[in-house]
Length: 486
Image (tube, helix red, strand yellow):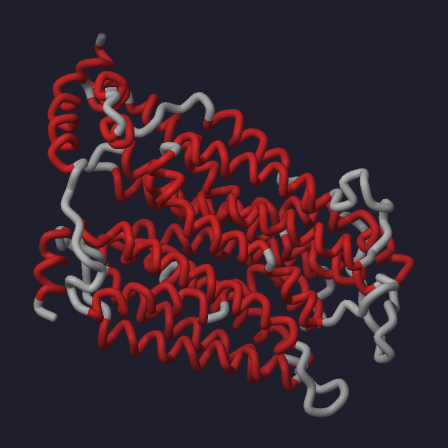
């Protein structure tokens, strides 16, 4: 009865932690390719019925992002028709099946270990399936947490989801490192042949499979645990199950507060909607461009291909450097979590853009110079860390706050779809750009790629300075008035 009067934070925390596992899977699935992609590339280069090019590898490494676009686009429909909980269960099943299928794309139907065009198509199908899970989780996990959490804790708890995404990436860096053990990624000689076949054989035949398959553990745990959390009170009221909604709210907030919240939900559950451009073109443009710049600055090219980058820099053990980068990333994500309400959104984005530009241009100017390899590595770390305290979490915060209630659903869906589209563009073009040469053996592609990312970071800083409104301390009603001026 005491919990019914005051609510139970332990109950709330347990529910949120299960939902946050969805964010961890988001990070795990998108970064697992970082350790697996070189072995995967060498495996499909051995195909006899087609030539596996850099462009094909860029697509294969990024094919999950096609699923992300599909999943995020369908998330609103699923969340409204099936509910938040059942949609997350569906996402969990997609994660699990994708992990198994990416590990064993032969599926006991095709010849085991025989690389050909059919196997490549099947592999990409399973990666797209996992991407659908990521796309749905990226939209519905924050929605679930936001709807289940008390208003005075909502910002902090939703921020935990972003932290979980970065933590998931760190976990998979460690897992990939452990799986690799004493084995090596393939290294190619000037003729395009694998120079270290003896050391890399296991990685090419088996290692990449274990990396993808490792996701079955967190995916299975998430799918199992999400079955035991309640549906959100808002959705329960929407489908006429007020008593169930009250029961959940009473456990979290206490009985008296639960009655107030139920009353508020009833009054807002049929909130009016307006046309997408009711608040002007600039409102939608700013929201979409926040998503575009978050990806166009190039960060996912680093997250997805970190071992390749560190290997090309001449680092002794690229997987160790990747783990170090993961630790740096999660540390600087915490900087954003604890400073966003004090410093504001715009300063963090502008300083982060400048830091990323400095890091990216540092890589462009020093890559390939062995005497400056330490500077190159530090520049990569500065670039990544600057993103983690700025564009990584803050863009999501602004997208959630920027749009007025009456257009938020449609506007957020468009912004998130653009985010995944540009994620795919950046990730699929990285390998071909990175491997460009003006003369045989030069590092032109490395210089060009990071020079381009650095230039985009500078444009992003100017965009935020000139066009993005500061939302710190403003209510959603304040934002509506702001955009109405347009």
